[in-house]
Image 1 (cartoon, rainbow, N blue to C red):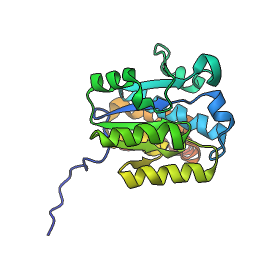
Image 2: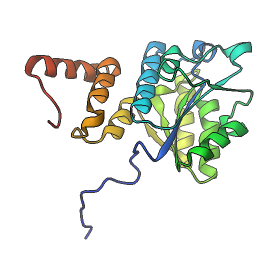
Image 3: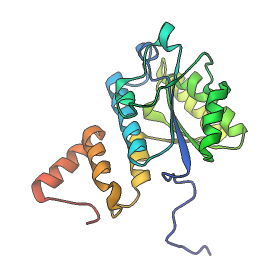
Image 4: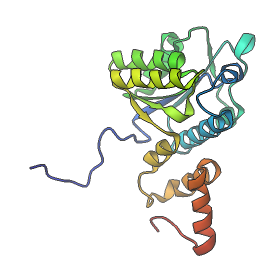
Amino acid sequence: MPIATAKAAQKLLTPNDHTLIMIDHQSQMAFATRSIDLALLRNNAALVSKAAAEFKVPTILTTVAEKSFSGPIFGEIQSVFPDQAPIDRTTMNTWEDPRIAEKVNGYGKGKIVLAGLWTSVCIVGPALSALEQGFEVYVIADASGDVSDEAHQMAMQRMIQAGAQPMTSVQYLLELQRDWARGETYNETVATAVAHGGGYGLGLIYAKTMFNASEGH
């Protein structure tokens, strides 16, 4: 008979156990994206970026052919990390760029969280590569996109079958917060959810306005 203990699963992310890599959130890549509405994609990319910054998660920003083809990284991401210049690559697989490996090794985290465009190329590549090298990999599905629903879904299935764990942008934020009694990040978590959490954010506005609700307090 298993014994229950008040302890979180090791598969759940914490702010200190992973590196986030935001890949190729760029105009040219977005123009052909059809698996997710672009306004929603930009919103979710902003949510993930703010969550990572709030919880001080080591974050790598990377682009492909920024000057010659794809354009700059989304402003919603760059504004959260104003002092961090994205690493611009020629490789479609981020993991094959030695500068990325150097950054990952420097941070020394065993888990990798990925989000970007396109899922079937620029996310599958590093996901499978990192898994093969012994990292645990998580993919934020709704902060990623592809040229069709089928391309995105097949890519997600391929990564899941290889051992990657799918998640969503709001899930990422709340998994890092985990406990509403964590007062040091409570206000920022709520602010990010209000700004980018859709109906959940509206619910927070309503509850706080109507009866001054405060989770965990």
